[in-house]
Amino acid sequence: MQRDFSVALKSIGDIAIVDNGQPVTLKMVAINALLSNDEADRGQSGEEKYKRFKLADRIHASDTVEVSVEELALIKRLIGLIYPPVIVGSAYAALEST
View 1 (cartoon, one colour):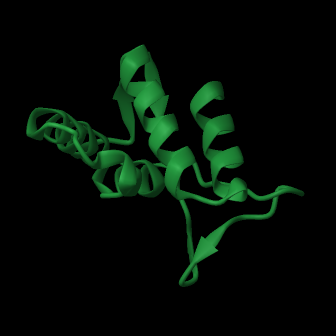
View 2: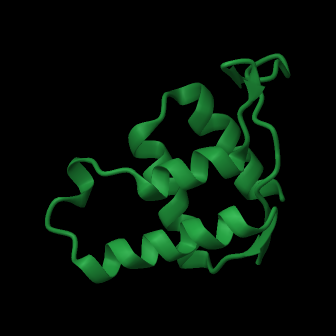
């Protein structure tokens, strides 16, 4: 399924989420989540981490990316682990609607 990762994330009330004066995009959040190293990574194989790296690289290379159901679930799980509710809510909505 195609997903548009260039979407700018919005807070409640349709207010743009910004970081250092720049809009936060789904692309930024997804790549950061895929490349993060947290408690969930402990015990994960190098192969699994490499798959995450390759997915992050695909997202970085294009605004619209073909992702599998499993990849979409992985992105959502990792975003949910490392980000606060305002980012999670906006990112999930973007992932589910694009």
